[in-house]
Each structure stands twice: as structure tokens, then as C-alpha cells.
Image (cartoon, rainbow, N blue to C red; front, side, top):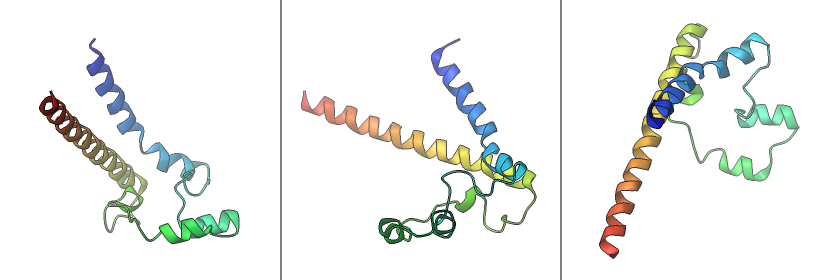
Length: 114
């Protein structure tokens, strides 16, 4: 089996497993997944909001907040799991596209310098 095929199989497995970040915290009553805290949750956990976090928290808003589509926040876990998988696929396509475009630009720049 080619290395690239193994890579795509691995990525596919990770996509299918992505809802575990939603299902496991729900199953074990753990609250939010580790590290996916908003400013409010961070304040509850730590007791304060660091200045840098407070300053930067309004700078970026996720394109797909909570990995769910608009209006899906109250849907059952099966629907949210589907949204997680779609979010993973979108993220992978965006990342691969950016890397591909950067590679093309760098190759063109490199060939012009010779």
C-alpha cells in the first residue's frame, strides 16, 4: 500500500473519530472538551481572565462555532456528531488547499530565482 493511501486512510479515520470530542465529555459528564473553553468557562475554571486572553478573545470568531451549524446547538448528539464530521472535512480541505497553494507559490518563486 502506498504511503499516500495510508495517509488518506489515517485522515479518514480521524474524521470519523472527531465526534469523540463531543461524545466522551458528554458521556463522562466532563463539561467542555479540554482546551475548548470560552472566556466565561476559563473564568469559572481559573477564577480570572488573563489580560491577554481578554484582549484577544474578541479578535477571532470561529467560522463554525462549536463545530455545529447555525441553529443546531440544541439538536440531538447524532446530528451534532454529523456536524463534527462535516467540520473536520471542511477544516482538512481548507488546510490542504492552503498548503497546496503555498507549495505552488514557493515552487514558482524558486524556479524564477534560478
